[in-house]
Length: 278
Image 1 (spheres, helix red, strand yellow):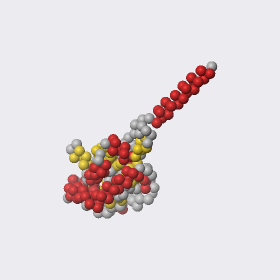
Image 2 (tube, one colour):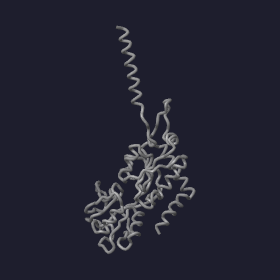
Image 3 (cartoon, one colour):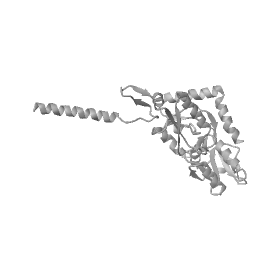
């Protein structure tokens, strides 16, 4: 009887150890805040990234000149900045191209270490992610048909407006919190800004609200049909998003941005792409 009890106790202890091992096991993505090595020592995010040999950036390659496709490659301002971040760590840069409204989930789910996508650092997004220092001042522009009746932002009141899903322009026009000065009639959402512009040209919507530099590019390509209003709807700042609480990676990104600004290399990157706009 005593032997049976001892044997049962040993079995239960072994089962408990196996259960604990199963709970602690499993892989960790490069975007996780920490990783546990075999000796139980906590490993920092940057150490994990270096160990893996790559850092993952998510973007939406529909936002020229910040990120867009050139053949099979994704290029642009944000790609060059992201490459500098990878270089500082001495690792490869991997890029996920996803829909804009999927970018925040890319970070929170651990699929990406950071997001660089011409993203505005606003209070709503700060609830879910942290942001680096800002690196570009931007604003929401209005694209209209040439010869139409929309001459100023106030003329958007009651109109049918196209936006890219999940962007600042979407939030402004949807106006769920009631703070926007302009009260559009209805909002049409698109995964790609160009699709909204196509519907504007076809007369299916009255205007498009989108970030200024992409707006400039769309107008240049269709200057006989559309125009950009002089007045902006908003003033905002772009920053790089990281997982909430990941101060180590945020600090490294801020160091990289500071070095690029101080050396003049950031301005050179802007000049390289913005010169293509003219």
